Image (tube, rainbow, N blue to C red; front, side, top):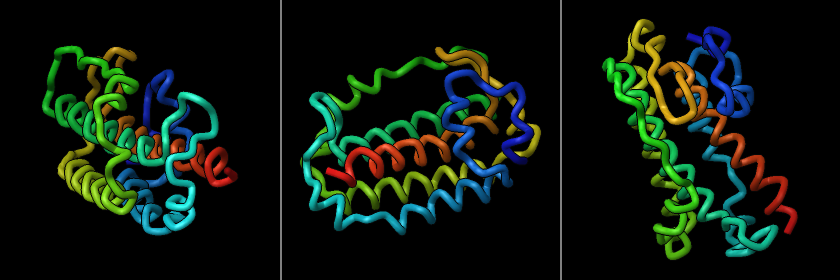
Length: 171
C-alpha cells in the first residue's frame, strides 16, 4: 500500500508523512534504511557535542531519539494491527532524552543500532496484510492507521536528518 492510501491523514504526523515518497510502504522503509548508509558520519564526528542553540540536542541525542521513537511506533503498529482497542500512551521525548546515555555512545554505535531497529521494523511491516495496514488505533494524538505509522517512521527519519543537515552541518 502507498502513502496516497492513508485515510484520514493524521493531524500533527502529516508533517512527517508528507516527507515520505508515495511508493509502496515496504519500498519506502527500505529506501529510508538505505539512506542511513550515506550519512556524513565524519562530519558529524567533527561537530561532536555542539548544538545550534542552547538547550537543543546533540546529534547523538537526535539519533537516540530516532531509535526510541521507532521502537515506540513499531509497538503501536503491532498493537493496532492485532486489534488493540486501548488508547496508546504518549511519551515525553524530552524526558526520554534526559534518561539516556546517548552522549556517552559513539555515533557509529548509535547508527548501527538504528539500522538494526529499522530492519526489524521492515520485517514487522512485511508481516502485515493490507487489512492489517488499514486497521487504526487510538493514541494521545488521535486515531491513525498502521499504514500511517509506517510512513510516519520514514518521514520522522527524514525530518530529523534534515534538521541535522540544515542546523548542525553548518556549525
